[in-house]
Amino acid sequence: MTAITANHFETTPFERVLLRAASALDHFVAARLERRAARSTGARSVAAATHEQSRAVAQAFGAMGLLPR
Image 1 (cartoon, rainbow, N blue to C red):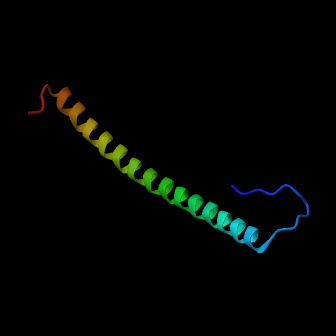
Image 2 (cartoon, helix red, strand yellow):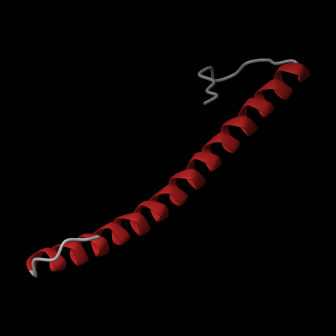
Image 3 (cartoon, rainbow, N blue to C red):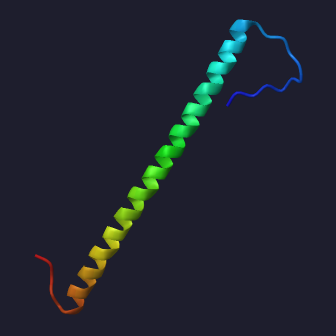
């Protein structure tokens, strides 16, 4: 992230453009990481539910003495 620790400093127009670009890139990367995190948790929960359902079916067949084909 872009951080400036001085209270007052003088910059050229080019330096201000660079600071704005760095700030925009920071914002873009943070937003993208948040979107990726939100998507991956949804996919994980669906996979976990499917796994639990399959496991319950397999345990029920095992309790009856049946093996999957």
